[in-house]
Length: 254
Ligand code: MF3
Ligand code: CO
Image (cartoon, rainbow, N blue to C red; front, side, top):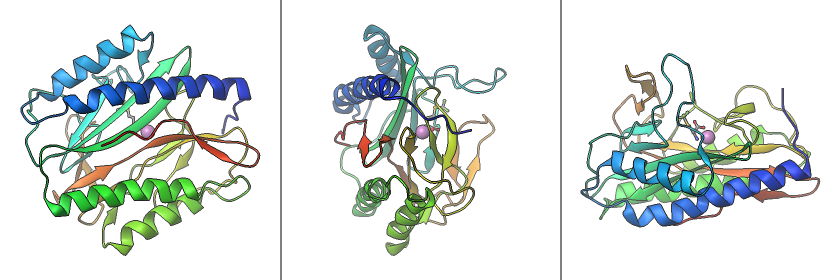
């Protein structure tokens, strides 16, 4: 069931989104070769709590195996939901950060991919095109149009460069919970509702140098490319109004 949000609720979700983007602006300069990913995670957890928010990913998921961190940190062949650890960031890594904040009951979601040190031209291009895919998807958000227009825009752009589009994981409704209906895929498949005023969605292309097929590791969270090829991931939270869409999260430099 798609929960349409009121203007007041969207105001609350926007505030949560602005807090999340502000956190990223301070976090990005810390993402440097030699840093352990668990230190970035602890920093983000403290920042969010000091700001009066709650990390939305921490404890999310099944009771038996909740996500154990504030940030998803997914490096190179890890696509999404990487668990922070003693792994140090190395020069040349593509580091995807994904985070949600709950503020007064309103949930935001944003992901960026950072190039640590100097990355290969191949990695840089993948990252650039993945970010472009996100904006192509956002341009396709038009009240009254069908949701899968987003997937068509995202996948056409990625495929024009020969890249793979991850289809086993999707964007989603967001705002009153981290994951709500509808599912917002990056390739055209599944239900295709009309976009309408009050919908708040997270668009999050996951693009790879290879086939786009992924595998889930034994920890039941970490998603890696099946062919071990590089991947990148960008995400914004977007609200739909009667005759326009608004990107609630701010563009931050990756
Ligand atoms: N943007 C991510 C997603 O939609 C946030 C994941 S938090 C996690 O999947 F707890 F599920 F990892
Ligand atoms: Co998301």
